[in-house]
Length: 290
Image (cartoon, rainbow, N blue to C red; front, top):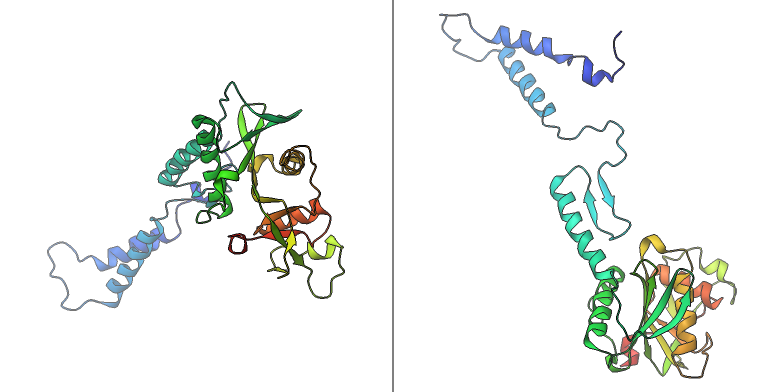
């Protein structure tokens, strides 16, 4: 019995016989002199040979593979070609460096400000030991690369507090950078939308948004908030903001009217709208803050 396989692997190409016939017609018999001018048949055979050569240059066959073409890694975010050995090698190196930056060994005097069933929140201050500050800087570099904040500097690094959400498997899966601010600006609703109705304003999170030019008093600014890709949707960002509100000022629980978000991305804008339960939350930028 013959095994059932795809036709591309069993049947010979249909143009093989035609190509061979064209070559036989174009090749002169032994001992005869070549024609003075190139005939129409020889020109046709050259074109057939070129087409056959091009058809053999295909390096990848799309036979229904699970991974084909450009792929975005859900963990490190790198875009690479699955069938390219060079791209896959570069992805492996980048992926390992990415995960190495998120590994959390821990230290004796950890400042644990909250504990949950799936991890804990560790607070790192600027005057902490060098190894703790170095770990916070490594994580913040990864966060800046993913959020596009590579060229943005903190307004006052000496007053910055970095919160790390450490999972039970000793890995940093969340980061929040908070800083002291004095004023913020309220996001304005889109024309035609009702104030206080987050549903209408979150239908198009990619749309450019506007904020008021009238400053309002604020205490805590959320400079960066990031969650590891595979761990998103588990309430990590919401719990981290809750921890910031209860620990940023000693003995005081901040309200949503006293915190602001810095230049949120479309996903950040959607999160802030849901967390504050209004599309008119507070934002601050580095121009006004400086």
